Length: 356
Ligand code: HEM
Image (cartoon, rainbow, N blue to C red; front, side, top):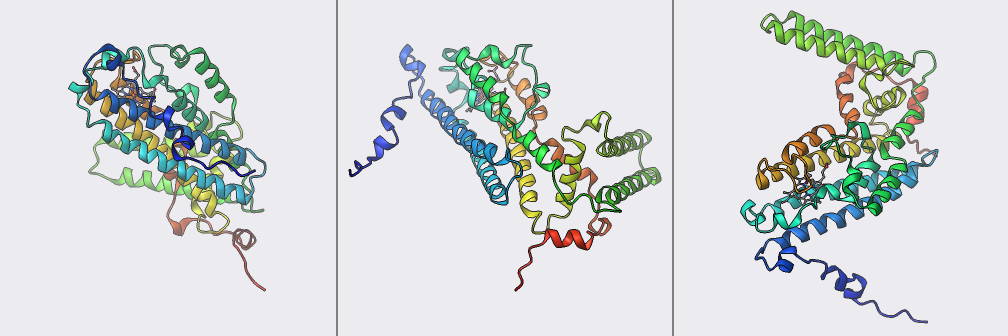
């Protein structure tokens, strides 16, 4: 039987999509021209959130497998890059909303109480599935997120929490990375010595700088001591972890990938780490931009969801980071010339050889 021809409006369910903008102000007979923009911008966000979650579904399937095949890794990087592009768009979208002035917003703001973006289930699912740790969350008036969600959304969020997060899958995958043991002198030992030497040299520079005020010198030396301790922690089988959220073997692998990224077999892994940092950075950018927009719209008033508004949101931008460990790696990078050479046997395994 021939398929019925597909009609544009039916395929996109435009009847439902385009009748889903129902301003509260219209119902109340209040004149608030900008509420339409406010609704459409939020709906556009929710559609993009849906697409991000769709990408995360495939990332979860591919990244959760052991081992992760080369084909799967290519797909994971591709999907994550798409998520990053969407996130960039979500930051840019705030410009459109900011064409609404704070005065225009007042036309309908009170009609929205107590609804808030705080209740966006899809946003919570994205944060959660990327791997935002519950203990890093900024508490909001001591009330958990759940209390502000409907029972159905609460159930959906707790289901999302049961799923493996990108962070955990990354940690496990990194910890399985081969190539770190070189037999005899391993990457771990060689690199550890090289980094500790470099950090000690930085400390010597600071001590030798006569122009540096004493207070600043002490602060800088303390920071280096802290860096040395947290670097040592990734080699300790037990211990407090040195403030890392990734496991020691995972951090070592991430360093290896960062240093030897030019090797063909390491390239996909390097792109993966770079894209996760892009995602983390753009999410943080969104949080800052949203916090600034909120300050511009409502000043220091509390949010419709009952938070301290701008102050709460600014703190989330600082604290709600998922892949901050990857940024921290840079503390432990050393100049190219000081990086240990790969043994020939490892080199051979990291290259692609095409010969007849
Ligand atoms: C006039 C525009 C906006 C204002 C004044 C505003 C205000 C706020 C405030 C004050 C909060 C903190 C919770 C509360 O007390 O309500 C919040 C949270 C939030 N808003 Fe907005 N918002 C605006 C636009 C948007 C848009 C367009 C989105 C896109 C989906 C959005 C998504 C969110 C999310 C996801 C949160 C939770 C953030 C978190 O807890 O980390 N908001 N918003």
